[in-house]
Image 1 (cartoon, rainbow, N blue to C red):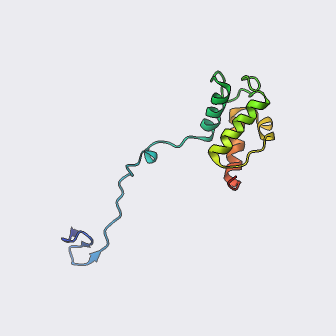
Image 2: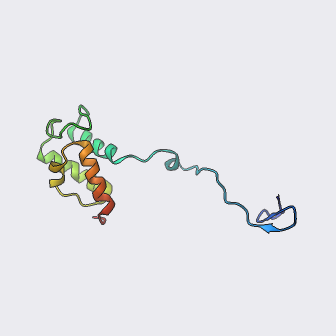
Image 3: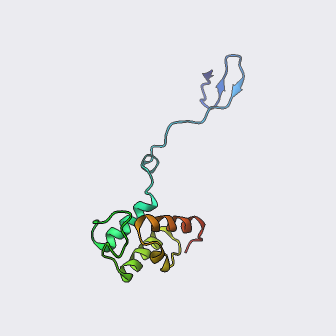
Length: 115
């Protein structure tokens, strides 16, 4: 196919006009090329910010990592603000590790209206 002078349509070899094909080039925006932060990453970041350290893994219970009820509330407030969803305080105590809390928050975020 050859492109007409206007550049808006394509002309096949038999003279039939066709629409140009959409560009298949990747977006140049940074967010399109960088992976999205996972819920586990978001929860872990909130724990680090509130606890003031990262000396725990994704299966360490919050209380063993140095947390307490006030700090748990602070983690939930950060996640609520970041995600825009309602998260009950009880959620933290039912899901005390980064991995468990991230899975629970992800389920709530997928079904919850914006807070």
